[in-house]
Length: 339
Ligand code: 13P
Image 1 (tube, rainbow, N blue to C red):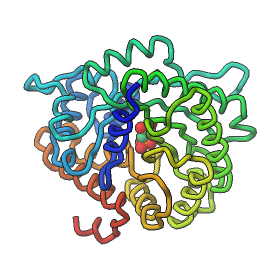
Image 2 (spheres, helix red, strand yellow):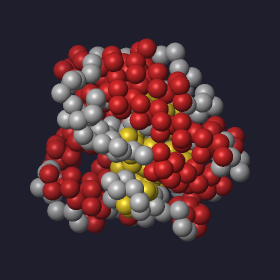
Image 3 (cartoon, helix red, strand yellow):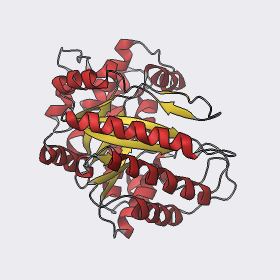
């Protein structure tokens, strides 16, 4: 295991002013997104959509890496160029989602465990050969009455740590993603408490599995109110609480934090990231690894029509540029209007 090489990749993933495009929707999830814009989810449509995203100018300027789904990493563009080559030639890094989703955790009603560790070493070797230099594994932690439990959090943290070690052995930087969901009516205090509990558990397991933190990227949720909570928190409160929770739980050896958007609106996700970077005073780079918050606008602009591709690329470039400014703490509402 070459830690200096892993660290160099991790640093590139969180380079100032750049962030990650999470384009790793499973076939089921991308079908939902396509249904919403009236596009049939065929293999060709999925390829065409991702191809125009990867060919857009945003890639060169704002996107340090792209998380792909298994189908996509093996796909070629319409002209026969592998999609991973499009990403590489834009100076961005191809990554791969390697978890195989969640299953109910026996004896823990309402809680899940992320699966996919069996045969992971062999799969990682194939992904490396195809060009992947980082990976993603998402643990899902729900907040509800009596949930999460310590047992389920520990099981998920352990799986994340086993995955991270296997990635590093394969020369691949693991994105460690413990997502505390926004679903539910819980308030921001409860999200704060659960996020701290989960991050503590994750770093304990990473330590026990001997994973050097210089060779990972953390992808956490922000500390934020549940979607159904009546008391909304300000942008400032989300930023202050998120920074405080991370400072209390995440060692400074971690090169960077790349947040998920988790169901926030595009502009909320940008505003929160910007507010954190304006406050500063933390040891990590803080950037984005957004799925929905980067793709909602281009998907809507595209609507499956070839004649809309350049408008969709412009919508993607705009969102990517806004988030790029947020990484630097330089985003302003006026930038949105100017576009
Ligand atoms: P969202 O930004 O849509 O939450 O997706 C990011 C991601 O990769 C979740 O695993």
